[in-house]
Image (cartoon, rainbow, N blue to C red):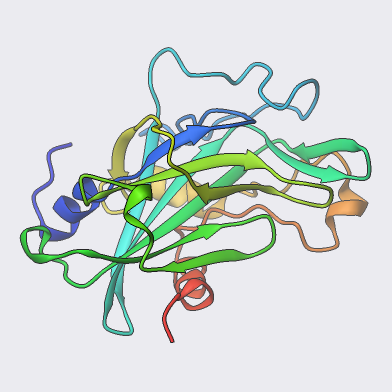
Length: 223
């Protein structure tokens, strides 16, 4: 979709690159009619049956002002995601990773990156004033999707490595059917170990009402 508003144009301008060190590549989460991806049962290698999609993928975004900063949240859907426990890999059928690019203006012609927050292995990693080696051409943050050590979720981190990009769809550009389906679907219903994951490692779409605002509050990187 062609961007028409400053919000949409800013989301395009600051769309990150995503490098995959380990695990699935991102896939579309929902169809226009509201059909949600079936995901993949957690088994085999972390990237089995979910390597780079032939038909391309999507990155989703939602933006708003928060404490005087323009926050652009980007979210990627993975058909399965890793959670390491003891010496065995365990995981979810569905998984979401997200990053928030903090800028000083909604106008893409008069804004700059102030900071970034990324979904880490435990909570959000906050980076005010990220180093230029992680930013291409002053606008494109380079992120890496990886799997950490024991008791770690699949997570994002800054990287110097170039990655791929996906077609951007903003929360507002989704059809009503798609947005409603994403908000109501239980992405945490199927894990490899329901008892283990009841300890707090849950999977939710970060863009939905309520969750979006709470993540901005949790991930705010400035004093």
